[in-house]
Length: 223
Figure 1 (cartoon, rainbow, N blue to C red):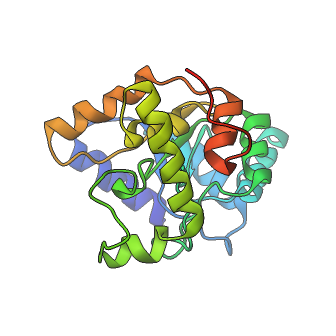
Figure 2: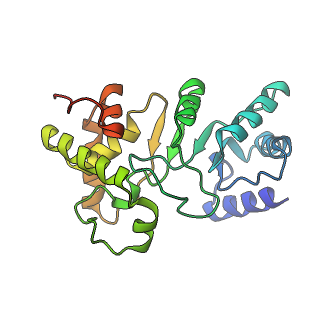
Figure 3: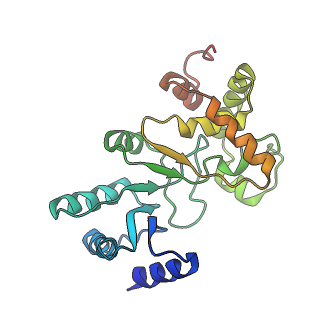
């Protein structure tokens, strides 16, 4: 009932008959996946949505949902929207948020090739020059300030200098160059930031370079 009510409200506000990609904003692990999959398939049958996905769903829940859908010959989750960025969050930015962090999660997405709509792909600007260790932004400090992330920012800066781009471009390219389909969700505050983000499309990162950005293993890759 809640999903249908929200969907009908969205259709009315958007003034459309069908939503191309309908994403559930949060999961409720206490609800069996079959209930959710059946509900979304009913909305699909009614023509209100074309495909659906889930934001902040764990890989375990996504797999359970899609296995149920396959067994019942139903549509499964066509996309996922977790947090994914070069900066690893110390803790969820908001309660109930899910990030791709563990190697097992990266491996799952690579195996299943489920498209990822990565929110906070630029880690809220962590890789820009405006964020320094003296920054007093409570959210930034709580979520992203760690030795690991400062090291990743430093390496992104070194590679950026070599490639003639910004560290922020390198960080965004990290999201776009994963071995599974990715769509980076960003929130530019002005046209200049939007144009800056577009530079990431010019940056190609091999698996070896991504690994170096993550761990620093080996020497800085030559470009």
